[in-house]
Length: 382
Image 1 (cartoon, rainbow, N blue to C red):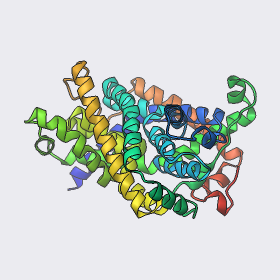
Image 2 (tube, one colour; image 1 turned 90 degrees about the vertical axis):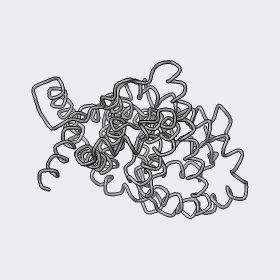
Image 3 (cartoon, helix red, strand yellow; image 1 turned 60 degrees about the vertical axis):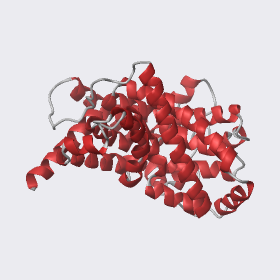
Image 4 (cartoon, helix red, strand yellow; image 1 turned 30 degrees about the vertical axis):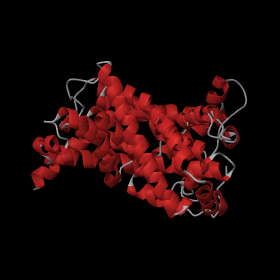
């Protein structure tokens, strides 16, 4: 028993070691973008569910934090300030599927084909969601959701979602290198880490346990590997359901996606699983608090349909183009530390992270960090 636990922990550590420098790089890039892109005009830029607003929502989401909870909270804030509900949900999806840190971690774990598939599939998923909302989202239900949203019931990461320290004066370089800009970058970097570290650690532990304890035969049977055509349809259907009960969201579900991919889930199934970080059980409960039970139910059904549908479309497109990898070689390895490029990059980026944390501590960051789960209504402001 002890040996199997140690093996699971060693595999979790190995995966964490492999993605340490990509994580720091991704969160640094995300912090830089957030520091120079203001949130103030977001609601004004999302007035309807037309193509321009949806494209803007995708761009704004890609420039935001990857934390699923913060994305959900910010989407509600935009909705309350007048943004179109469909556009706000498109922003939410982009925040967890088009951000830089996600692509970097996917490249490290899953390879370029699945990374490309994620970025092709995300706009398709949003497009399907828009069509579903136009068909099934009634005006009455939207008004009920708005009334519930205006109650301001707390979810999670409210203060983080409302934080706007962006610098808008000067050139892009001047914004990034100014005293205010460097401080903003350090604050976004640390707070993004604080928002998702539990999901990352949880994802690594679950992935390590599944990789160590679940035999390959189980995965092959569960994902219908012996029936290739059926497996391509089954993967996008079951992928989101696995995500729903895993409780892991944001970039934390990538290690688990690697285990599922090695285990035999279809190409589209992996993508559907990664998409589904916005319908895990804790977030579904937040939807209930934010918008009411009926809207939470509609969000689950429409999100699930859009995620599975987009993943199936991606499976077909990449299959026709011959871009589905023949070999399943996601990075799931035993623990080992050698003096290779990974170790040197980890050392370099840990130093960078240390500098950002030091600036965060010296510029009032801890006080802000304590308020991450409070809303502006309870005194949080920047």
